[in-house]
Length: 498
Image 1 (tube, helix red, strand yellow):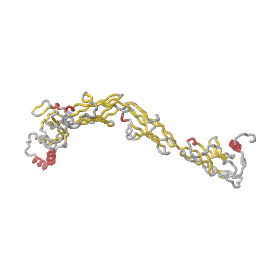
Image 2 (image 1 turned 90 degrees about the vertical axis):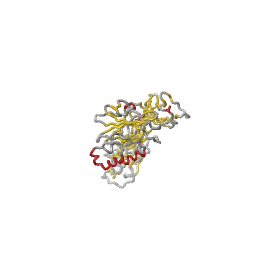
Image 3 (image 1 turned 90 degrees about the horizontal axis):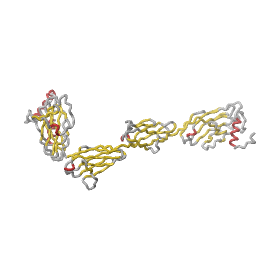
C-alpha cells in the first residue's frame, strides 16, 4: 500500500496515523508501551485506556516554559497524538512539528519553551482508538503591557485656547489598564491621576503645558510608563513682582518682571518712553534667569524716580507691564489690634518706611455708620475739600483730620502712635494714614477699622482702667491727645496698657 509513495518519513507517519484511526488494537504494531514510552507489561484485553490527567486552562507569561500533561493508563499499543487544530504536533514518541521549542518530556507530556503570543489556543492530546478519546488544554499567553504613542516621539503642540487629545495605545494580555498623570503636578482637572484611553484638554493655557505620563498595567510584569510632552504656544504674559518699588537716593533698587511665553519672548526695559540699553558699565544692569527679568539700579538718583515698563515680544503677540520707582513714603502698615482696651479711647499704632525724613503725617478717623460702604485706596487730594474746623466731609461722613509732626528716626522705618479719645462705646471707627517727605505725599491707606468696648466691659475692668488713667494723667479729656513716640516709647505705652 505504501510501496509507491514518494513522501518524507514525517508524511508517511502522518498518513499511517490517520489510517490507524478507528482500526483497533494492533495497528502500527510495535512493542506495547505505557504512557511513559517504556515497554508495557501484559495488559488485559478488556482493560480500556483511561486518561489520568485532566484538561485545564493554563496562563503563562510570554517567554516562559509550559508543560501540558497527557497521562494514560492501560494505553497498550494505542498511539497518542498531540495536535493543535488540524496540525499534528507529535505521534507516539515521534515529533512531527519542526518547531524546536516543542518536545515530549516524561513520556507524552508536551513541553513548550520560550512561549510566544501565537502559542495561545487549544492543545489536544488524542488517543487513537475507536472512540478517538481526547483531552483538551487551553493555553492563554500573558503578555506584559506595552505602549505605542502618537506621535511616536511623544511631542505635542497646541496654541493657547485650543483643544487637544492625548492618546495612549496599550497592548498586552490581559488588556492593560491605563492611568494618566502629570509629572510634578496635578492634572488640569485637579486630580492626581485619571483612568482612560485618552484625556482631552480644552481651552488650553500655559498652565497645561508639561510632561504627561501614561502608565499601563495588567498584573503581568512591571507597569510601563511613557512620557508625552505638551507644548503650548501663546503670546507673552507678564507678572510684576512689585508694581510700586520704594528706594532712596544713593541706595539700590530692583525692578522685577516675570515673563512667560512660547516661543520664548524678547524682553526690553523702558523708563517712561525711553528704551534702556544694556550696558555692563552703567548703573543700570539687566539680568535674566529663566523667566525672571531684573533691572537693577545702583546708586539711585532723583532722576531715576518715575515710571518703568517691561515689554515682551514673540511672534504671537506683545505684552507690557508698568512699575513705579518712588522715593515717596510707603503705605502705612497698622500694627495695633482692632479692639480697644477702653470704651472711649483707642491707641492707634502704625509703621511707615521712608528713606528721607518724614515731613508730615496725616491721620483721619471717623465713626462708621451702618449705611457707609466706601472702601478702597485714595489719593492725597481725596480729603482736601469741605474742610471745617479741623474736620472734613467725605461721602456724608465727618472725618477728624489731624496733622502730626513725625518724630526723628535714624532708620528707614518710622513707628508712630496716636491716642484717640472721646469715642463712643460699642462703636466702629475707620482710620486713614498718609505721610509726606521731600518727594511728596505717599498713598493714603485703605480704611483701618477699630472697635471700642462696651460700658459693661468697662465696669468689669475698672481696676485696669484706673491704672490707665494714672498713666495718662495730664491729658485733656475733651480733645484728642497726641502721643508721638519712638519705637521704644510705643512698646512702653503698650506694656502699661497691658
